[in-house]
Image 1 (cartoon, one colour):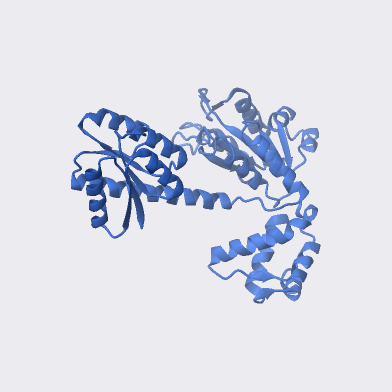
Image 2: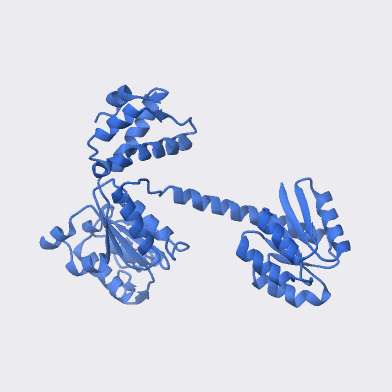
Length: 387
């Protein structure tokens, strides 16, 4: 049921608005306040889906109410109620964030349409917020070990800056989680997060993928195409497995980092980009530099902040937390009951050699959930977790 608050100092108009809304739908629960101070106090204490607020009121006028509510609960749509002489102010309130305004005396159809539209918008805002939270949960970093706590601490210090970060560690340890945390906790969180797996793109196509191309740049270039750097403008680009990037592409990435400019393949026109770069690799880049496979100047550009993600074997204390997390996540994905693991089963999992790291543990937990008993025990682990 949608909760609506009517803030209006004229008792007659307040009663009319409450009566219209209450009689319109049994899905509306309508409360009222005779001035702005009382209205704001009610908004602080209760959750409303919509506020109708008069502009001219004693003690606290409608503009002040609007500004206060936008600070307290910005998701609540506010419809202003304006007298004939308040129209200019009413229009200005929309610049301050009001959803709409209605004139006195209220036209029935106009009022009800505005209320429905405002409630629809509120529902979309809530759905969008929940979706963002759901997306964020896909990149949770689970663990309380000293190594993971250290990484979380670095992220908290670095995320709000534009410092470039190089994330290293074995395959399957969760390097991409670090990148997503850095992005989501940054000032760029509202911008795009573009991921590029440098190892998955053929070397002859990597430059086109990163920087785009113009029509006719090569045989299959049938039209102009923007690259990943342009797509990430205003946000973050995550260059995964950067150790597999060709030397020629490395040179262009270096220029992009130095000058904040790129050129599409086949063009000499500079395109400005505002991108934060996070890179990751499972290779020893210093060894790659010695072997002439990676540019030292690019390494130093990328490794302003260096984050090393440990192998699972180095953080075995986190395995119980990870198992519990995967149990809940898999049950949610499959629509099944959450299974529990016995202490002995967990202890046995902690003793395994996890060469595939977190990725391997997730697969093993899913296998045990599917093939194990109602409660996964030590025998289930011995039977189904073997490699």
